[in-house]
Length: 257
Image (cartoon, rainbow, N blue to C red; front, side):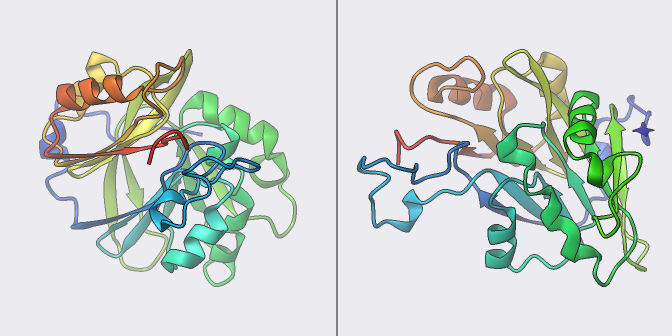
């Protein structure tokens, strides 16, 4: 299913998000694909007693008014949701199909024990196709009985996320096209907040979609260049292009603390 719920591209991002309810953002994880500490590593960061040096895989939970939106379901999702007391999920926005961002998808099942309504999962066409192939027992044509009731939706334009509950709420979301090496991936904008992980390039059209944001979460892997992630220097340059009031770097390796 392809969703183009808001084709009015002549509306500025600031105007489109003017009615977004107040947001509360929780970074569920901020580490790179291995997680920190890295298995078998005895470096200063991986053996540190400082809790800030323990970083689970990247994911984000946004409360928009009463609604709850999740960005990615990595391998640490269950642990993260328990730790932060996540009780409501109205939609999942997937950035891309790599293991460290999707493999916790089956842990969405408990969110259907009380509420049986389908949970929309929004993604780029490439991501959706890979998820349907890799998790056919959940989002394929013949899902396994008892699997999470997920509705995989391909999005190309700004869209509206409806509530899964009886409160008539909704929230606008903009998919932000990024490049993760050669792979097209998405970041997401909600109100004046944007989450852009796993990126090595941001097209000019995507920068325009980010006008007026206050808080930016941005990929910054390590000091040295990398073919599929921003280095620290590249991340700082990208943050200056975007011009958010506050920027937070995520997806760091154990090379930094």
